[in-house]
Image (tube, rainbow, N blue to C red):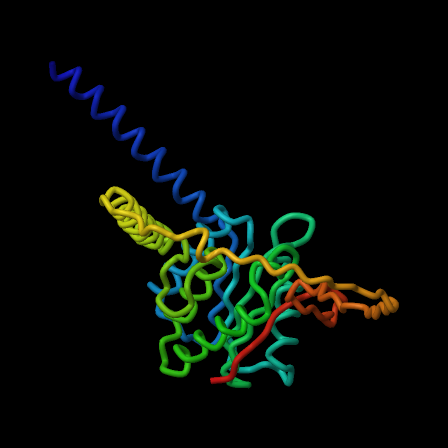
Length: 255
C-alpha cells in the first residue's frame, strides 16, 4: 500500500512540474505588448494587460499593443504611434493586422493607430468615439481603465459605447416585445370578428346613381430630365502613410 501511495505521489509531482514548466515556457514565449515607458501602470496592472492582449490576439487574430510615453521625441502622437508599431514588428499575418494605443503624456493625447485588418474593425467615427472615451478616463488618472477599454472594444467592436453592453444583447428583449405586441393585435382582431353583429341594410336602388360623362385626353409631348446621382463608395475608414511608407488608419483625442 505504501509503495502504491509513493508511486502515485511521484507521478502527481512529475505531472505538476511538467504543467508548471509548460506554463512558464508559454509565458516566456508570449511577445511583449505592453510598453509602459511613462510608468503609468502598476506591476499587477501591467501583467493583467499583457494577459488580456495575448487572449484577444488568439481570439481575434489582431495584434493589440499599448504604449505610454512622457517623451514623444518631438513627434506628433500619430507619428510616434505609427513608427512604434512599424519598428517593433507588430501585426498578425501578411497584412500585419492589429492596433496600437498610445497614451502620450508629452502631447497630452490618446492615439490609436491601426494597420491591416485592424483598419476596418471600426469606422472613423466609431474609433473617434472610442478615443474620446479613453481620453476621458486617462484625464481622470484611470490609465489602466482606459487601456482595458481599448483592448475589449477592439476585440468586441459591437459593444455599445455608452453602456458597454453588446448590441446583440438587446435583440432578445426587442423580439419578445414585438411578439407580445403582435399577438395582442391579432387577438383583438380575432375577438372583434367573433362577435355577433347585424349588418345595416343598404338601399341599393335608392342610393345608386351613375353619371357617365365623355372625357378626352390629349397627348401634347414628353419631357425627360436626367441627372447623375452621386454614390458614396467610402468605407468610412481613412488612411495615411507612416514615415516608413506603411498604410495606417487611426485617430486621437486630447486630454
